[in-house]
Image 1 (spheres, helix red, strand yellow):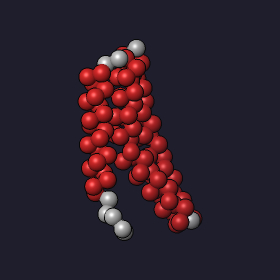
Image 2 (tube, helix red, strand yellow):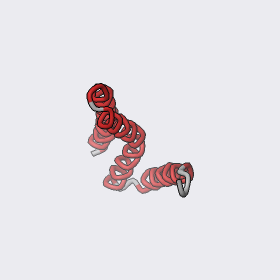
Image 3 (cartoon, one colour):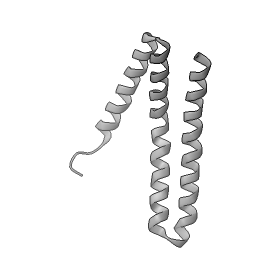
Length: 95
């Protein structure tokens, strides 16, 4: 079971990295023909790139819960809470 979780977490990181690369590359190519579409694809790729570490934490949290490892599940939950709080604190209100 532990090995499966490690592979799932690795796949989440790989999918995020390759997915963001594909979106950004497609956006740069599309920017030549349709700048609005290209810009949207690049932005989507950047969002995916930034979301990948958070998705990794969520995947690890789920795996720890499935394994019954409460200690590391709580640590993952704490790290997730810190990341979310920091992200929300960085967003300007009313803009």
